[in-house]
Length: 172
Image (cartoon, rainbow, N blue to C red; front, side):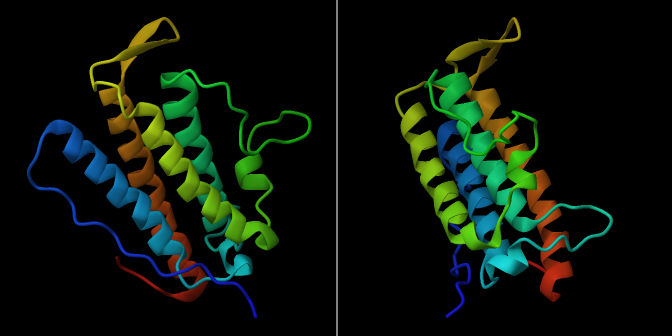
């Protein structure tokens, strides 16, 4: 039996609530959207570069987003000493995209979902106004949430095109 990415649903977008509720709600909606774009596809389909000449794949995006979540919420904001999820042996950039393997698709999707929870836990007690210094400039948790929403929105646009190129599915 060939593994396929499981079906998923997106949470409703919050239309009321405090700022944190809105930011977390939008981020969770975009997080679920990337899984929706992968649902029903095999590992091989998730690794198909479906929009030539770009080598971008859905599984590469999944892996990249897991790395980005970890870096922004856990490493940069919470100061956790955790390794990168994906890396080339020589340290060259791009491993999340370059090393995507159909045989590890299930593990990579599970890892993304696990990373979401780790990131939620890492910032659970923090205030949106809490800051860290990056490159000599203060960056607030609020800014990180907005940045992550933007990151997912951009990559979900890529995922729309990739999914359509893989099997013709559009929308959602």
